[in-house]
Image: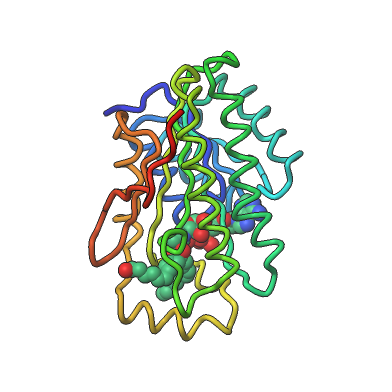
Length: 256
Ligand SMILES: NC(=O)c1ccc[n+]([C@@H]2O[C@H](COP(=O)([O-])OP(=O)(O)OC[C@H]3O[C@@H](n4cnc5c(N)ncnc54)[C@H](O)[C@@H]3O)[C@@H](O)[C@H]2O)c1
Ligand SMILES: CCCCC/C=C\C=C\[C@H](O)C/C=C\C/C=C\CCCC(=O)O
């Protein structure tokens, strides 16, 4: 499916998975707004994208997802430049167990703020064209591990619950919105370099036991969610053992 004419915003996209998701969307014809706290790396990523895909296809905006004001300004600048928005990917995340409050502000607060702003910008009830909100959690958001960060795990469980709850909202259909959650297992990115020393050895042991995703497989899982237009509220894991798998909520939501 072509994404020509679509506009996407991806948070934490200067490097790693966010950069790879952005490039996958660009390859399919979308325009992408790359946002990140890392200014020089974000600008370099966008310069590279502009060389490959066209100067009008990508832009960079510095945005700390933990700052509601900065995030709101980012949506405004994006809409002023690209005119509309169709896909929001709340990807920015950190793994810093020594700072649980910052972990909550970025991993969960950032996803909540980004989702709420996306609902306003995309909703047909607010003058938008409808669209897709993909929130990036982790397998650690579905299954807690014995030797993996509790604060990180708590925020990722939060991302899954928050996003599923929005997907079940009865007004979503008339708003023209679709929600999805991507839950990768260990993936080869720089996030390991930012991990607390306390967890590095255990992370390496888990990786040796369970394997590690190449970024490309996680991108396949991401594009599966972009393309599965019939599916609202999908939660998909990407693991090296099982590949891309859809997960139902353990108990169905109650009906009125
Ligand atoms: N790599 C993995 O093993 C793995 C597995 C499951 C889920 N994830 C999730 O995928 C997402 C991307 O991780 P990654 O592996 O690409 O990590 P990464 O560290 O390579 O990239 C994360 C990006 O987010 C940015 N960022 C950090 N704090 C930010 C903030 N406050 N505002 C805006 N941007 C910010 C960083 O500058 C960086 O560019 C994260 O949410 C992470 O939890 C990663
Ligand atoms: C080279 C090591 C890379 C380490 C990446 C660092 C952080 C990863 C964060 C992920 O969100 C956590 C992922 C997995 C949680 C732990 C184990 C689950 C394993 C499930 C499985 O693959 O079967």
